[in-house]
Length: 191
Image (tube, rainbow, N blue to C red; front, side):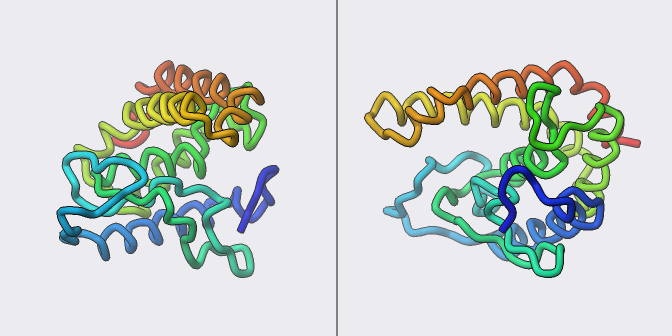
């Protein structure tokens, strides 16, 4: 698994494309799954429930062998939802779609747009979903911040720590960054 600061092998185009193909295979394997009516999920199902979303696909939930992603782990946040909901967070983490204040793996907008296109191509993403992907990434981060605050208010100390450490502010800044550059990202995706 890869943790921050990210090792160089996570930052390669080949690794980005491989994780997109892994996510596509996982999504395709879950398409059509009908959970029991009383199924309990960490996150509530989102409509349209096309697949079982991983919910937290990031380098720290990916197993690498010789620098290549070979498996996904950490399914505790899995839930039914649309492919784009999962893709948006994975793109945020792997492309990554982060602003200049996020020092995890800074890239200029043009490089992010190019890598976002590679990610979408490797996933074999359809035209309509490509158009929605950047906006959904921003929406996904807003949802994450809301979730962090809900869990912290419910007394979950890990989430309170994340907020105290400024993670929510960083996610909000990244959300605003994605929204600011949405047009460039969509243009790259639709070329």
